[in-house]
Image (cartoon, rainbow, N blue to C red; front, side):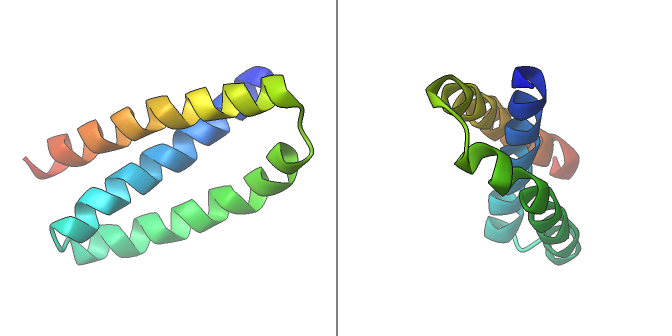
Length: 80
């Protein structure tokens, strides 16, 4: 479960980081697609982390941290 929780957090925050870059650079189509994906991932994610223990919350937060770096790097790479 810890790996799955990490990957889910990573994916969600990678999408959010990429979305932030796209909004700042007015990439409309990308914003629309990614906003759907963020919401879709969130639907599966919220219930698991809300009832988790401290270790799972830390793993989730680490996934989020790595997701930020990935999302920013991918958005920069795609649009460069």
